[in-house]
Length: 426
Ligand SMILES: *[C@@H]1O[C@H](CO)[C@@H](O)[C@H](O)[C@H]1NC(C)=O
Ligand SMILES: *[C@@H]1O[C@H](CO)[C@@H](O)[C@H](O)[C@H]1NC(C)=O
Ligand SMILES: *[C@@H]1O[C@H](CO)[C@@H](O)[C@H](O)[C@H]1NC(C)=O
Ligand SMILES: *[C@@H]1O[C@H](CO)[C@@H](O)[C@H](O)[C@H]1NC(C)=O
Ligand SMILES: *[C@@H]1O[C@H](CO)[C@@H](O)[C@H](O)[C@H]1NC(C)=O
Image 1 (cartoon, protein in one colour):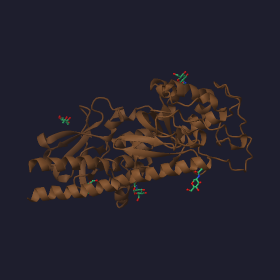
Image 2 (image 1 turned 30 degrees about the horizontal axis):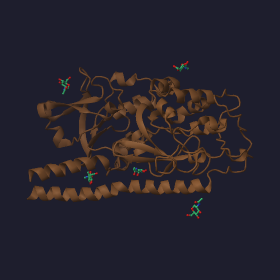
Image 3 (image 1 turned 90 degrees about the vertical axis):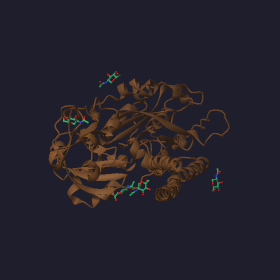
Image 4 (image 1 turned 60 degrees about the vertical axis):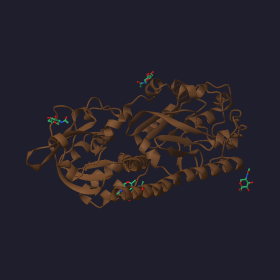
C-alpha cells in the first residue's frame, strides 16, 4: 500500500507539472482591488508563467501599492519585482502560521530567470510575534516590512493567492540594466551565435530587429553549429531578399518568453509574415522542451540568452526553414538535405513590408542582388505552392494532436487521483 501511495504521488507530481488547471488572470478579475497587479501580470506575461506552474503562491498587492515603481522604472524592472511576488510553493493561511522554525526562504519566479545572484531570488517568510507573518527579500539583512494581510483564493495545493501589505523590492532588483539598451550583436556572439549575428549585420536585418525591440521582440538564434550541420541549407542559393525573409523568420514582433510560448496554440506570425498564414510557425511542447515547427522541420529551443521585457533571445538547434523558401518536408528517411525550392520568380519573391534595402547592404552571398520590390503593390504575392500548403496543413494537424495530449493527461490524472483517494480511504 505504501508503494502504491508513493506511485500515485509520483504520477500526480509528474502530471501536475504538465497540466495547468487555473488561470490567474481570470481569478484576479473577480477582485477589482487587485486590477493593477492583474494588468501588470498580463503585460509582463508573468500570467502565462504562473498558469504553467504549480504549486505556486501569488502575493498580490492592492491597487496603488506598486505605483512608486511603475511610474519610475521600465517594465523589465517591474516584471522582476512582480516575479519576486510569485512563490514556487503553496502557502495558504494555515501553512503561513505553521512555518517550521518560524522562518523559511521560498524560491520565487525571479530565481528562475538566472539573473538573481546570492539570495536575491528568494523571499524570507517569518512568523513574527503576535500571529503576524512578515515577508521580505531573502538577501540577508533585508527588512521584513511587508505583512500577510489575508488569503484571497486557494486551490489546494496548486495555487494560493494571498494579499501582502507592501512590495518586496530589494535595491539590486531595481538597478538591473534595461533590455532596450542591450547590444543584440554582443549578446548573440557571447551565446555562440556569431554566424547568425554576422548575417544579421550584413543583410541589414539587425536594424529591423533593433527598431522592433521597444514594442517587443523575440529572437530565435541558430547557434554556429546549426550553420555547419550537414543538412543546413546552402544560403548562397538564396537571393538577398530571401535571406532577409529567412532572417526575419527567426524573430517575433512581441515579447514572448518560454512560459508564453508553451501556452501558444495554433500558429504564430514572425517578422517575415506578410499575409495570413505566410511565414508562420507553430510551437510544440513536450514537458520542459519547446520546439518550433516550420512545416519543413522542427527546431528545439536550446537555451535562453536573455529574458527581459521587452526582449527575449533564445538559441535554437537548427535553422528555421520556412515552407515559403524550402518547400515541403523532406522524406522521413535519413534523406538528403531539404531541397532549396526553385528560386521564385520576382513576382513571387516575398517582400516583407519592413525589409531594409537589400541592395544597399553589403552581401556575403554570390547570388545577384534580388529585385527588391518588383511585385506590384496591390498584387498579393504567390506564397507557398499547393504542395507546401498541404504539408503545412498536415503539420498543423499534427500540432493539434499534440495539443490535445494534456486532455488525456487530465483524464489519467483524474484516475490517479481517485486511486490516491481510495488508497487514503482504505
Ligand atoms: C485566462 O483568462 C483571461 C481572461 O478571462 C483570458 O483572456 C485568457 O485567454 C485566459 N488564458 C488562458 C491560457 O486560457
Ligand atoms: C529571515 O530574516 C530574519 C531577519 O533578517 C532572519 O533572522 C532569518 O534568519 C531569515 N530567515 C531565513 C530562513 O533565512
Ligand atoms: C490541481 O491541479 C491538478 C492538475 O492540474 C488539477 O487536476 C486539479 O483540479 C487542481 N486542483 C484544483 C483545486 O484546482
Ligand atoms: C555591440 O557589440 C558589438 C560586438 O561586441 C560591437 O562591435 C559593437 O560596437 C557594439 N555596438 C554598440 C552600439 O555598442
Ligand atoms: C492538396 O490537398 C488537396 C486536398 O486534399 C488535394 O486536392 C491536392 O491535390 C493536394 N495538392 C498536392 C500538390 O498534393
